[in-house]
Length: 145
Image (cartoon, rainbow, N blue to C red; front, top):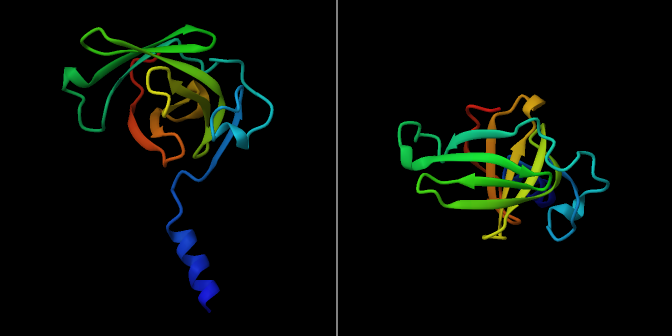
């Protein structure tokens, strides 16, 4: 009986984003170790640029606007309203909560990862986490090109 209760508790309290599989270029990420061969060519998400507002309720707050653009086949750039730019390295392909996309890591904050879904995945949710933590919603992808 105790075993059953423990199993139910584990199932109930498991993270929502448990449907995660990675095919990464580098095994430097704890998440990349679960993967195998790379199945997507570097930054091949179908996007070359997009905008998002950091957080779910900040669409009218210009200070929360972030502009992203693909720099090259292994790097994305995030531009803040004050002009500061953060670069993110593409680690490889990632399937998260049923959506295919790529796993990125911030170059200036290597403990932070971002999930960018592929344009054809049906998802517009940009997700964020600290390495090894649960995925959190960061914002919806808007004005995608």
